Length: 79
Image (cartoon, rainbow, N blue to C red):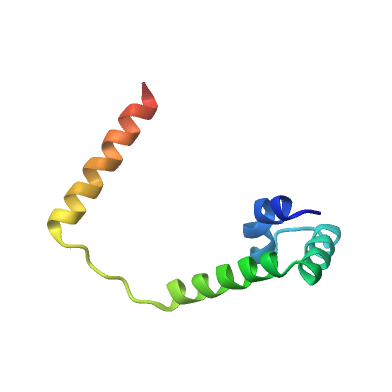
């Protein structure tokens, strides 16, 4: 297991959607890799913060620009 593989499996690992073998491989890699350990810890903390936060209403002009940008991207993707 290398850093790139850990990052690819990060979401599944955090969600607990990996088999026992893969879980052990990720955990073993993390014991020797401070960068991956930090990435997983920071991702978990970010998820906790967002899950516990309240929704913030976007100002109308920001919401309209965001919706327009999404429409443009979807239209481009369909072509």
